[in-house]
Length: 481
Ligand code: NAD
Image (cartoon, rainbow, N blue to C red; front, side):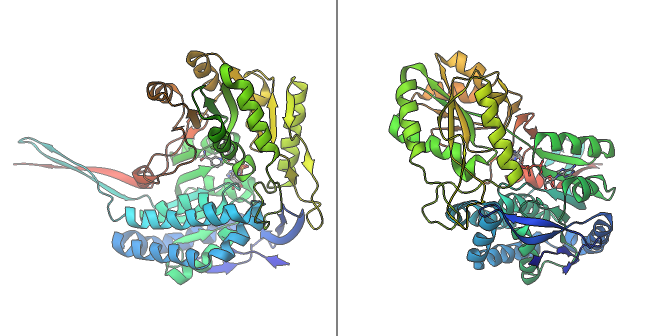
């Protein structure tokens, strides 16, 4: 049995508690590694190391930091196969997905921010005959990065890369459900020449080490991605300490399909937006609104396509849908399917746990599930399920669907499917979402602001937004004589 370790001050260390959690492979339901249960003592060591490293790292030229981060990107890329297998074993996702999305994207995150920092600039404001203001943007100091289990290394690196590029030292915590690829990162950081103490990776639970990071007085900013309830808790702890906060939270995203679409082509894309990563992407569309005129035709074609999807173990090259991440999460999803039935929903396909052949017979597989007949106001359509479950709802016109689409507490992302350019613009403008895709889904440009409105979060990641978040602006005025 492998025992993972914390990465503190450039070295791997056992947790001071001597205690570990089980790390389960969701595709088999078997424990395959142990995760350090870290606490305040481990955090104190990491913060000391980060404090010692800060003067060197924060005063290095952007060009030197960039070179280190480019080597880090190359180090992950050189071990692509190892990272892909580790990610899919930890998370249950098809290896094909980890190979095409998760790990290449982690490489791009480091590459992108390594190059972005060389172009990052701050403003100056000239005042005629009076003087000049100029703004410096210096690193904040020690920052905390806390990430979820759905896209483990992808989202971990989405925070760490800009934080490091901007010259901060980082205390990072991956999800305790999927810690493995983060635990590999320390080795790559050492090989890339990241100075000891600049990046520290602590494992353990949210209420213990996660909370300790948020509450530590020397950690000046928290970048968090996870559930809305956790985000509320973090804000309650961090706000009175005046920490900078970036919160990327849950969603209940609408997919809006107008009658002028090519049904066959749209069905395939909506399948992807609904069930990629077993529906465990914060951006997945889980409420599908279909115009009355094509409701039946679209529904029938969609259900047929979903029915033909292959649910299989992650190393099966034909797997389109793998295992959901944990037993607890599987039970939560199955409970929501029961709730949907109680609320009057009709299961058109899926709706149950699947038993694969040994050795995957105890894995956490759920058949992709399509439900109709539920109103937008019911709990199934208001609460985030975060699994392979979607509902279908008909609509009559633009005004009605806009109300329905905006009718939850969330505001993360939407996709709109139509050939009518004016309608696309109107909808995109009026949807209360941080991200709107038209005739597409999850097309990402790392320069664009990423994040949600309403209960989906505070602040934006990506591009200059992330570099601004991880720096402290100071305005300096010089008077002209
Ligand atoms: P979660 O909130 O349970 O956990 C996220 C991280 O926070 C984990 O590392 C966890 O250990 C830690 N944590 C938990 N309690 C904490 C506490 N009290 N203090 C500090 N840290 C704590 O979320 P999850 O179940 O891992 O992830 C799924 C959620 O993440 C979904 O709601 C999903 O929508 C959301 N998500 C959002 C985005 C986005 O960009 N908006 C992206 C991916 C996932």
